[in-house]
Image (cartoon, rainbow, N blue to C red):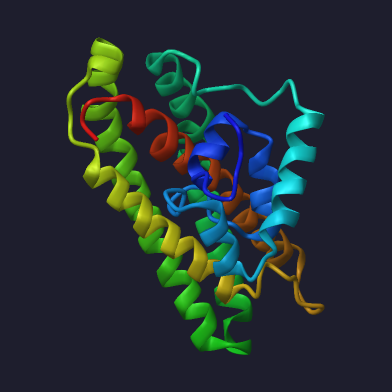
Length: 222
């Protein structure tokens, strides 16, 4: 596809995976907010659209053989990829992050009680919602796609709504952690927690992008 200022962010990300690196660098939402034109997304972030277009073109020209074109793969293959690359790791990573967050809150929570309490409650709510979301996908949505491919007919709007809520929670976590800037007084667990939460955000953005902008666009339930 030819990339212009009117191209939708999610569509750009789907057809040109390298563009997601530019979006992540500038904080452009390409997963939950991927349905808007690039020009509008840039305006929301106070960015110069021609400059971002140049960066995207440079990134696409460089290429990366490790970034697969999932928009060209069979829907069933994409489902299997999502489960193995995102669902299974999340089921291990979410409890690990919770344990670190509980420890940091217990040891350092008195330094900023309101912020740490908000961070803990936001994360626990996100974790519960993600576990439920993944279970519902694997119990109903994904089996339908595995059986019928792109001819699958199943409503995906509830899953898109879940993604929107998850995106909002991730944005709140970023705000509460000060964009994941590690405080000077942070212990090793605190540092590992901040890095882990940032990695979670990056992974979730790719995860949601592949579902919202690639998989869900190819089934009849949208």
